[in-house]
Structure formats: structure tokens, C-alpha cells
Length: 85
Length: 388
Image 1: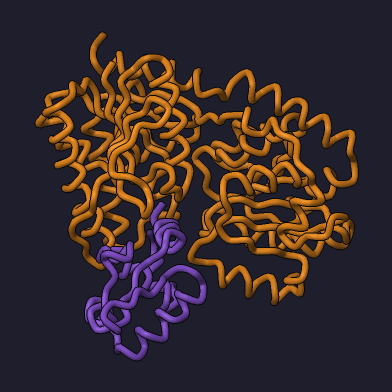
Image 2: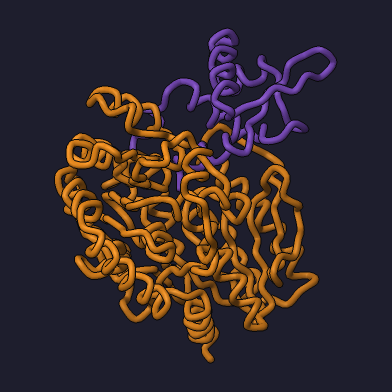
């Protein structure tokens, strides 16, 4: 694993957190505030990074009662696991 | 025999070579009549239980998570243990076979409470993947790897290079280790493809020659050396295009490198592609490059050899055992873009040489790297572990 975490871009660090806390399908999607708390990241910065991940196809949004919830896609899971394999 | 294989990845959860390895092994064991269970992790869209080609696949739901990867690993191992315990109440299990440190805790605890032998396959080591141990996580993973080899009745590795690494690093008795190579299903490449149509589908001109890389975009795969070789390849063969299949955490760095040497217009990053696309893309390629700087086995080289594509591989680990220089492929010096460019240019310039490599490679695949052979050898190891 070396010093990989230190080299991660912000959004990959967030993707890795999102994966490890189990937001890996629409049923387990999490709200921005929860994700920001888990990642110890400002909500605005977390949202920017989540938008980058969505743009790359590594995360998706599910809207529940008008509120956005985020989860990792299959390609996002593979991206995270490539760090450790 | 009743076999329970533990792996953190199994199709469609495909990260590295372990997933393919476990699938090939499990299917062949089932075909030989052995009752074969796979206990693995959940994946979106995949059922928690299914039978596929005789293999019983049990996917474990990870009910709790944690941001720290090591904590997450121990958590999913706990849920795997529950799955194995539940399975053992319904089915007989003779042997547990764990693949790599990621499933070590579940393998070791199952061995003790079921009172059956544990066999481990060590596909790679932390010290090899990370070029040494540099932080607490690495030290812990190294410790878990040692623990797995210590607790296992037999340890399987996929190459002689890995045997030496495991024997020396973990101080393991030589007689406890068995070398069983990886294998592939060569029949999947026995299809005709319209190369021009395949190239068009991926935005590649039909006249362009594809220099293919397949793998995770992580430092150990050495993709940067292929990118650094690009100017010398393009200079001699302007119709070349480097196509990179796979993803990983250094993708952006690689893209920046390609831009900094002015080759971004000649390099295509495709990300993950489907199995079918990968087969068609491989069959449409002119050279496969495997520039790894650490490679315990190197199954991608076998894929290229089976597909009839000349292979340029770096002279490291298992790759140096699969590829015989100037006979079944071209061995380039490690971390050496000039050497990679030399091999690629030689293959592109000399069709007779390329054809000679391909014929020899296909013969070697047929004779040595079949899943039937691997499954037979694995059963022999299980018998040794069971004291038969």
C-alpha cells in the first residue's frame, strides 16, 4: 500500500471512503452531510468532489424525497479496489 | 472432495488476476466432479447465491463499513466467517483454500473452528507490491501475509520467482510451498473479428496499428515506461496507437505524462471495457506490452499469447518464466522505455519474426497453461494438506 493515500487526488480519497463505508448501491446511498462527516471534509468540498466522481462515472445520485443521496457505481468499486489489489 | 475457496473478488467483481484465477480453478474443479464452493464479496447486480458451471457461489453482504481500508477488511472477513459457518452447517467442507491476505482472517478462523486444513495461494506480497514496507498499514499487511502462510498447511505460488520471494521473506520451509502456474481458457480467442469494425468502435482508424496495454493503472504495472517509449515507437511507426485498457489511481498522472511528452494524440485511455470487447480488442491488436516492474505471474501475457498477439514483456518475476526471449515473446529490460520501444519496433518491422513468436507462444499455452492441468495439480496439493 506504500504511501498511496497521501498521493490520492481529493476525489479518489472520497470515493475510497464512500466505498469503505458501504455506499455501494442505490439502497445504501448516503446524504452529502453524512458523507462529509465520514470523510471529515467540508460539505461544499465533498459535493465538488462527488460531482467530479459522477462526471467520471464512478458515483451516481439517487433522489429520495427530493434529497440527493450518493453511491459508488460498479466502475467506482473497481477503481477503489485497484488501489489494494 | 468438498472444497471452499475464499476470495475477495470473483466475477463480475473483477479487479486484478485473482478473480479470473479463482473462476478458472473453481470451474475446472467442479468439472472434475468436486463439490466446489466460492465464498466471496457482494457486487452490484450479482445475486448473493448462484450456481455457475457447477460452482456454488456465495456472496457475502458487507453489513458494516469503515473509512479505513484495514478496518473494512477485517469487517468483511467477519461477515465471510459467518457465511462459512452457516455453509458448514448445511454442507460438508474438507478443505479451505484462501487467496491472498485479504481473506486471511476468515480462512484462519474457519480452519480452527471447522478443524480442517487451510491451503493458501499467495498471488503477490505487500513487500513486492509496495517496493518495501513504508508505513504502518504495509507492516500490518505484511504481518497478515506471514500469518496466513504460517497457519496454512500448504502454500501455493504461481511462479518460481514468487516461491523464492515467499520462502526468503516469510522464512517458510521450502517443502511447504508448491508452484502451480496460472492458466487461461484459450478457446475464448477462437473467434473471427472484423478488426476494422472493432477499431472504429473504439475511435481508432482502421490503418492504425494497436500497441495494447491491459491492466490496473498502478505503479507496479509500469505503464509509464510504455508511455515514455511512445516517441521512439511513433518515430519508426507513425501509424501506431497505444491503447490503454484499465483504470486505477494513477490514471491522471499517466495522462499528464502523455501530454508532457507530446504523445497524447497517439495514446487512447479506454478505462474498463467488457470481457467481449476486451477479447475483440486483443484480437485486433498488433503487439501486447506488459511493462510491469513487479509481476508475480503475469496472466495478461498469457492472454496475449493465446490470442496470437506478439508479446513484449519486462524481464521480471513470473513474466520472465512465461515469456522466453526471442522464442515466445520479447523480454525488455525492466523500467526501460528504450528496450520496450526496441521490442515493439522489431515486431512491427518484421512480420516473419512476429509470426514465429506467435506460433511458439500458442504451442506453449496449449502444452503448459490449461485450467485442467492447474486443477489436477491443486487437487494433489489438497491431498497433501489432508495427509492423503
